[in-house]
Amino acid sequence: MAVAILSVYDKTGLVAFASGLQALNYTLLASGGTAKVLRQNEIPVTEISDYTSSPEVLGGRVKTIHPAIAAGILARHSETDLSELTKMGWKSIDLVVVNLYPFEQVAAKPDTTLEKAIENIDIGGVTLIRAAAKNWQRVTVVIDPNDYPLIIELLQEGKLDEDTRRALAHKAFAHTASYDACIADYLAGYPSMHLRLYHRQSLKYGENPHQKADLYSFHPFDGPLGGKVIQGKELSYNNLLDLDSAWRAVVQFKEPSAVIVKHTSPCGIASAETLAEAYRLALESDPVSAYGSVIALNRSVDEATASLMRDLFIECIIAPHFSAEALEILGSKKHCRIIKMPNAILDPVYEYRSVNRGILRQTIDQGDPNDQNWKVVSQRIPSEEEWKALRFAWRAVQAVKSNAIVLARGTATVGVGGGQPNRVDSVRIAIQRAGARASGSVMASDAFFPFPDSISVAADAGITAVIHPGGSIRDEEVIAMADQYHLAMVTTGFRHFRH
Image 1 (cartoon, rainbow, N blue to C red):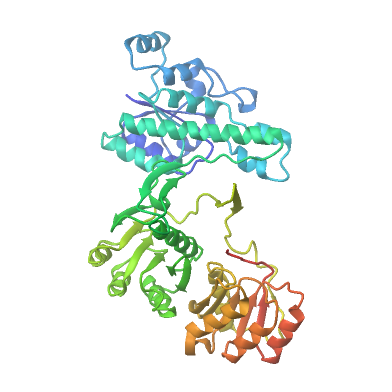
Image 2: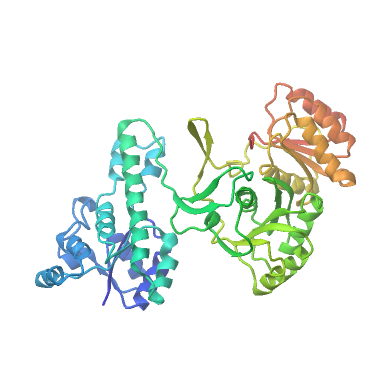
């Protein structure tokens, strides 16, 4: 009978994974906290301290470091090693499932003391991972909960081979190397950055045919953006940039939503009660620009939505799922790439951009930290209908290149302008694209208005309410212009530049 040892800080997916191992007749050993969770879910498990007859000591600092565990993992598939294990009364361990104390996250908090940081340096977990990775020819090491479904599938099909174990060992050593580097940086007192990337594919070319390009991933088994291409031609460099822009935008919305992107800039964003209606509204925002676009949707693509896409030339569609009926319809679009995403999680929480001789890193902009700074600064208060449109427009404008302007009615864009060196030009572009629909719409701006001219242009087009961060030295002039035209104006206190 195969033996697995489980010792995880992050319990995500643990119960389902352990249940899958139990169904495959694995004997489960686990450290205290992990064992407790498994017992609570009625999964048979033996605590490591019971197996080794050695209790956890020093307040849990020592719990998995024991010859019975280390030898069980490090034993080779040889008669000599296995007989020595038998002589000692120890089991051969086949699967090691470990993730570590979150040292980097804890150390990054401003109120973390040195003592607390040190207590979050994992010792036993790293030892188990390194031992299993060293013995990858016999032992499988799993450090990432995202890999649990794949491991169960491979075990069920009898396809967990040496190549897979080697790739998992590679991932494990990369993880412990990164973990140790974070600790070293913390103790040194200054940060450095260590990136481990895995080559996924060589692309046909970069932004232009004379440029070479490759796709790298943070995880060795990930497909493009962490998803899976289920139809269409090979993805290009530009496809990947557009897909990333569209996906990052659509996952910010909780309601069924669609985002249509061209050259990394949204030309239509909408939310609705159904995905089909959201897509229809997003397409209406700018059907001309939508030709040859990339479309992201945050719900399973159904037959109704796919039917609406039938006649539009689309480069790529990305969504968490596609129904069989939708795939049959989209199958007629032979060259359209279809990417299925595993979840709506943005990973990592940082984004990186190269500059000459360096790298810029920042946390992902996931919207306002709170709405406590929102203020109605105009004499007129927005109507209920305007509030609904303003809230949507404020979320939508964050996906548009600065200087970003979005016009919205209800929960759909009707005009988008961005990427201009001055804000008033973006306002004019958004109004031009909206046409007659600009009248009665609301306007969102990703940053403050440096001059009141944008408000005058908006009012002349029939826009009734405006939302922006505020904070300009000319805010009083901007507000006065809004009051002159009887516009409602809301300031948020948060800027959302996207360069």
